[in-house]
Length: 213
Image 1 (cartoon, rainbow, N blue to C red):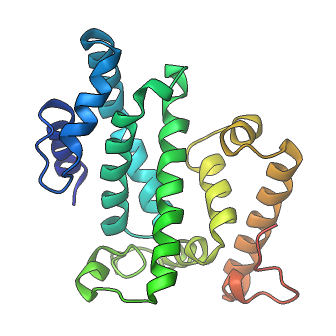
Image 2 (image 1 turned 180 degrees about the vertical axis):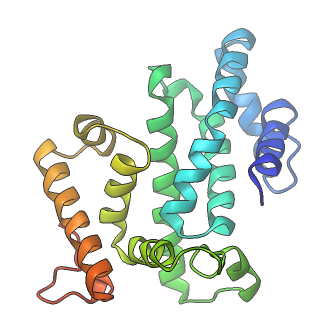
């Protein structure tokens, strides 16, 4: 699903609660309206403005667009229902990423419980399988190396490298000590560098170095 289509569907949620893929959307919109129509309109427009960045982050976190788009739609629905919890509008991007990350963790736990059952049609959107063969080998290797990182290391690398957050902003968003941010990022970069230099996935590195710390 492209960004334009995702935005259209999310606008349906915001304006009409009519997205057939999100049956609770109408309830979400109704619940969010308690903050008042004017402030809700501002909230909705700010939410739509965050969609491109949120989808970019979700795609990099998940390693593919199929799951990422589903998570973004679910994230928008939850954000509407919980709009009164956002006390500082300028922190909306981080707030949305936190909701999305929690949903991703829920999905990982659900997949683990039921075992790996992946619809092969969903693989067509997987960035690891759909990289343009015309792309330089170095780019393909970089994407594969990032996808091989543990979730904790991939997340912190994306927040700093992709989203441009400072160490302190990452610390606040993830609610972890500043020192943990710095050490975890250093390990993520080390494993990424090792993977690129040796061709060995970070999860296969010796001495437990593939484990998050």
